[in-house]
Length: 302
Image 1: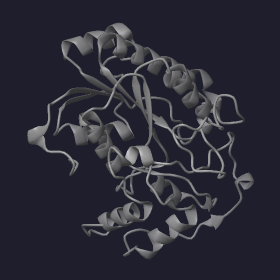
Image 2 (image 1 turned 60 degrees about the vertical axis):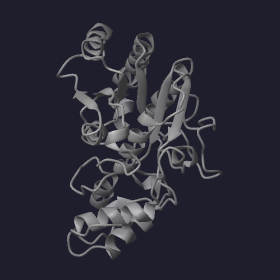
Image 3 (image 1 turned 180 degrees about the horizontal axis):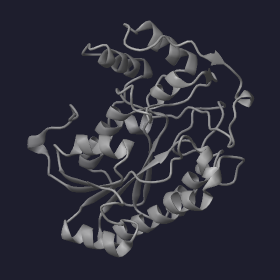
Image 4 (image 1 turned 30 degrees about the horizontal axis):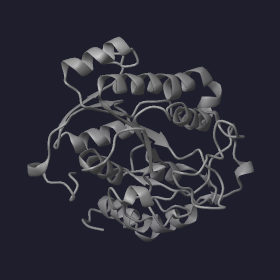
């Protein structure tokens, strides 16, 4: 989908390289491929963690922008990072720092897809200026520590860091979709958390790339999340109310977090998206839930 804010006729085509062919990378590629000269690669294609290989690819293809969607996320969840700390640190800290540094050296704009799970609590809605309280120096998951570590260690570099949370897409069969996950869990906890509608993320990146007058010098962070955040019960209720028989009625057991068999502490918070809204107007969670449900019910529109 091409953003309504963009016109093909007025765009200068960029040569874009997306690193990572996973959930987020594929969606971004499918949006940008019709707008710019866009390539997407996995480590099966070539080892982009190797600076020599990556440098050669950049120069041979005249790459102007790299979007790094790769990294350690954990399967089935972030608990895996507690068991594979070396791999998590290498993929979430060491490798992206090396790629970011190489991009700066070669004059390539660098966009890094990261996470907002470096905050916790409801004392406030967290902005990009707030010091993380669920990061490297806190009682947090190792995954969150690695995400905060990259931000800290890249403050001297030129980059755009995009924080997302609990990604949602229209495909209710996709195992990486937050909605698919909670539809399958028998036990749920009722927390309020920011979420990211992937089509909005893709349009945000489209607009960010062509934004006139935007400086690409220094570190620049964006919370790309949807506004008017739902709690888990509200998400379940919305799915049930709009169901026209296309998915099973949801009736989970509501439990406390201590009742779940988890290893690592979890981030629960809401993020402020005012800064991101200046680039692309993000939908509310009510609107994105309508769009997802309508899509799966075969109805167009919000």
